[in-house]
View 1 (tube, rainbow, N blue to C red):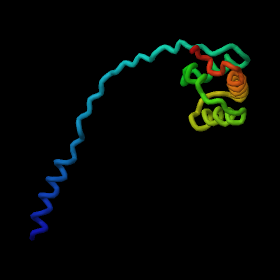
View 2: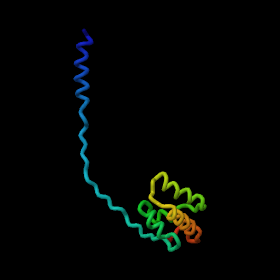
View 3: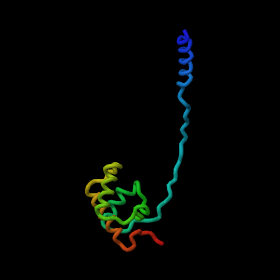
View 4: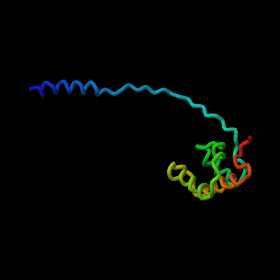
Length: 113
């Protein structure tokens, strides 16, 4: 008898919890800062500009720690495989060559003091 009286009360309680919360979305505008740094000239620069700057600013790219060619190949491979960057084999090789060459320069950061 007690079970029969308890069941309607539980159903009413569950029904009260079944309503979805109200959510309001608002439009937002974001203004990204300009990056005044430009990539230094060199073979592969166009490949970097065409394939990397949609996600990475030039100053960020130029501030990366100096690493080996094998590490750059791994980094570019990760961008392609894990993050699905649409970079073909030819452009990937040019990006690696460019980053290795830029980091080999004495002014490797490319940033003015």
